[in-house]
Length: 291
Image (cartoon, rainbow, N blue to C red; front, side, top):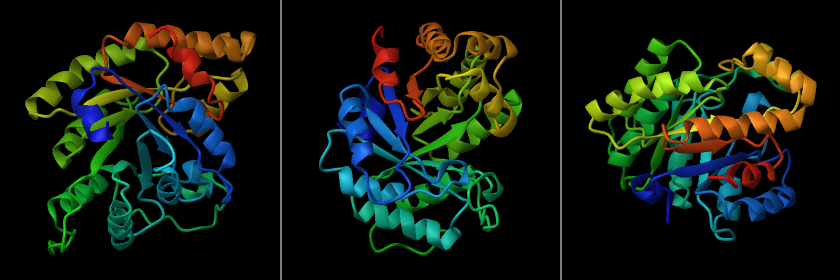
């Protein structure tokens, strides 16, 4: 079933994500897709994550979509294109049959491998969702009618349960109002934060009369060094010191055990999981084997 149907009909949803790669050889990506497609309802392709230049996720999705039985979910950030370019890109993707998007504000260029490039940031994640919703209804951002609406777009946004709760719940409400069909979170490492967030989020979704689904991101830690790097350098990620200490002592095996335990604790609270395997596709079936 397509991703719109998945969101509407499946009780528990599983997605994962892959990095499209730096260049036009996607053979290694395809090997990971072959492993993952049986386990997930969709595969996200990132959009030059951490401001490191990679091949276009839309192009990769178009190239692979008829070869593999999975739903492709393209990330799109506000960092690299102005409002005209963003709309053009979404419409071009829809013409190619690429309809699933996760919209993000994007990391600043200074974080990445082209630190002197310019960030555009004509809009933020919520504005991108509004933009896509307008294209879905048949209008551009200036209110001009399209000759045909991009009616099949499925639109996602991001929130961070580990951030300021009031602020993140406000973002959730705004993104649902803007037309988000699904919400994917930043990785969180404290189950209590998910419980608290979902207690507040469920009434917001209900009040909006929405069927928006909330997927919690799981990123297994490979090492204490990785945990400390994420804490210091990735906006929106906060890993408790006790978790860092465990991974420092036992490495990736501890990271996987922590992730498995986390999934067991939260799976009854949420609509699904988004697993971020950080290059190790075999992580996904390992984490899902007990679900």
